[in-house]
Length: 183
Figure 1 (tube, rainbow, N blue to C red):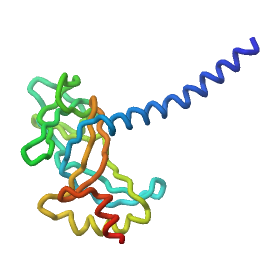
Figure 2: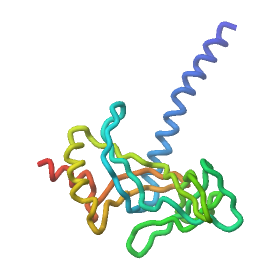
Figure 3: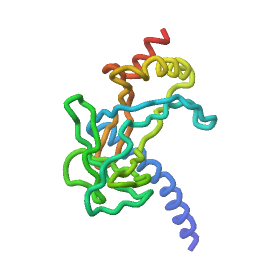
Figure 4: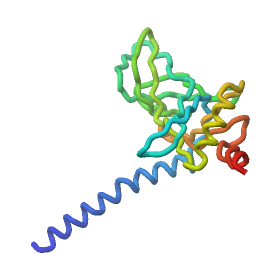
């Protein structure tokens, strides 16, 4: 009987480590093995005193057509099928309640629905940056937000999960651009 509390304690400690390690593992698997898609977006630079500096990434496509006969409610998790166009940017081509059997898809949340359209809440919305680089990132953003090509979010997608990998402008990675500007 003396071993039972020790066994329960060991299982509880193992569970506390298993949950975050599982999340880290799936995040890293998506970054390593996921398909790279690119989304045109806007990225203002807010500040959060608890989490630090980040760019609030908002893909330009924030709504999609609801298939005929499908009833969606606000806050519902659905799957958005992504198709890459000739310009290399991905767009949502269809929504479904069940995961598609093929292609690139992301699990998203619905916002409001109206007329056969639904607003989409993407599973990523922040790109964290170094505190020292934040003022330079903010200046870079202000200079480039109105460029013809716009800021591109590079997202890795695997089995419905999406992880924001980087931002780019004219094919150059965001971190590389900031390193050059800081020199």
